Length: 468
Image 1: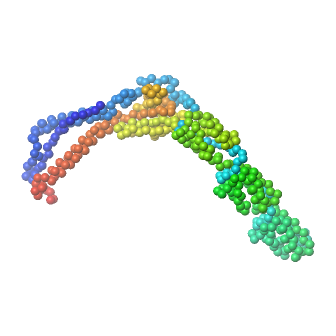
Image 2: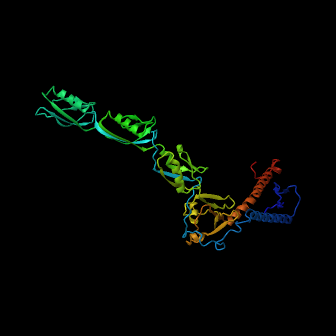
Image 3: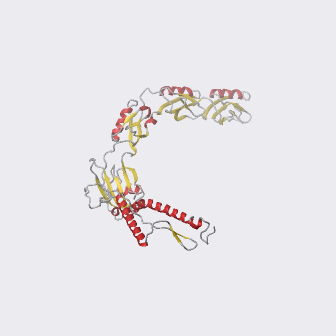
């Protein structure tokens, strides 16, 4: 509905009172008081009528459901099997669509052989043996035959921080760090022969600072694994696991005798491209890094899992993964707050299968001050021209705990909260009268300014009470 035409507005003649008390009127047609009041009354009446018509036009009835024919509880047929708070249904198997986020975890991820190590792989290494050399901090068990009876040499002695073993008072100390057990024994015997006639020395390492090597070690930039001090680094990139094991054993052979070493692939770099969160892209695929993309749109989780496993079987030995939904972004519902003339608010939430109308309203922290308690669900139907409306008894589902209209939310539902009628009317009236208020404000400002600086004021006169 539209409003067109010109509406008369009442007119008031301004006056100026000078020093002499005379009244000067503007040079306008004379009118009686009754005429002016009549004009004003007719103008006000036209304004009132126009305001009401504008309010009706701004919130008037349209076809379909609107504020004029909104559904009301008890007046709209709702099937008795409609899912409600106390009679919820299980939603159909979830189908994947953009922009869902899938969480993929690895159960069995083994690369096809032969596999050549690369940066990012992780090796599990275990190595142990008898230390070849004595080091500061080692403890050795030493027994010397032929020592002086009053000063026997026997027991566990430490290798000092300077690499020497102190043999006790009268015997001095011997430098042994960096020597093998046999070399250290010969060095001690040679030293004692300066004091004793025929010393016989037995020497064993009982505790070494070289601990057995065990743990997971990543292949770092440069293709090397960095072992704890003092073992250094070993280049393994481009080698198979077996070749890497031999290279590590050869490297550790300088530290241990009778070495046993085991190297296995604990985690390979490609796994990081498979596990984790994956966004379903607009083309309906998930990207697995160097393993390419896999179409998953329209699939259930089981179907997506099998599709991804089948794709990965090109690169892996019998891969097994799990697929779950990390973020339900494609199945949503909306809460719409009619804005009482200030613009509607629309809120979007994911459907997880258990929400009701009350849950939905709680997501927006309750009703807005401009909202009424007139609420309904607009549910899409396969028929593009059809509509299913489910009225909600707000007082019933809140104050009375009635579950009859606390419907279960389904994907695509629009929960519409109508605005307060009085607030909407007030907003409509304010929109219509605001331009007139501004015009009148400017008019009054102009009249006041002209009145103040006209007549005697411009000629140097004015009020005798004025200060200028």
